Length: 359
Ligand code: BGC
Ligand code: ZN
Image (cartoon, rainbow, N blue to C red; front, side, top):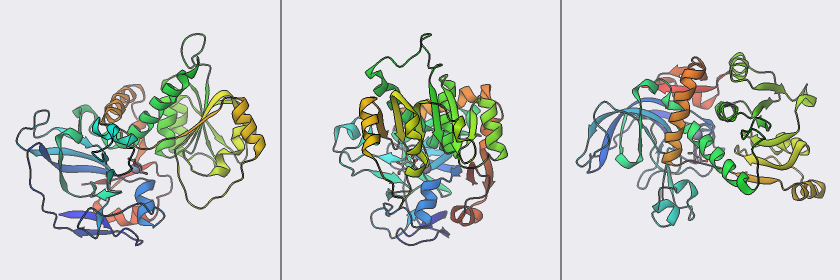
């Protein structure tokens, strides 16, 4: 079958006919791929910037892809919740089987670090014509969402992060006089799909949402920002428009992007680190530490998501499909055949929000 593969440690990507023999076992489901999304992690693996990728046991290559959407072709013995024709999104991370979080389905909080992640670490991914997976790690997608459900995985990570945020902020009263978050300002650094999803989710929760980038918005970004009621700020020319903040979400990974904004952080505010890059160095001053301490500022990092976050992501997609009919459609900026995968993996198309492979 056709698959998009990499040799971790080597730069580059290939489309190949691979001979993966998987037989349908008890509790397993055979899935035909419909779409696979491409993200910064995939590009990091392809261009050698991400060094934690490694192949599945016994193989020297890794099938890429962790943002899947497919249709059930066949179910194995004992499968109860899925049938042929159902749409499904697979969960990315599979637990270590040892720590309690993994045993309870919270492998996104694995404590041993011995998990695998499809298309990333130690497990073949979903950029292939078909795959077999466990029923338990498949999230059923309502047919009405099939055109956008390839966005479920990236959104699941955002849902999980906001879940953590609202949990840790219960350390005091963070809601406003009217019990909502309408008095809180959130600044999201970066306007890729993750930045946009943070903005959409926080706007949906009533936050005053600002999207910051160091350039003007691309037309789709400007359109989305306007529709969801967020303000897009070009920090290289209108930095003074950035308000005092209750929440900063950095999706860029560049300390030079978020450290200067930390002077805007209010008492009891939160800085969430979501993006990662390599190689940038930045100075942290003791003044900054003093302000973090004196203002009860909380800083946390977040990665990955559990099945329940995928399910919540689907609920948000369904709300947004009604509320902003054309936004989800616009977020998928191009659909390419698998033959073009190397091209779009090696170089991000200009104006891209989400490029997907159509099978
Ligand atoms: C994926 C996560 C994964 C992470 C690893 C992201 O692109 O969406 O599921 O845990 O990469 O860094
Ligand atoms: Zn990803």
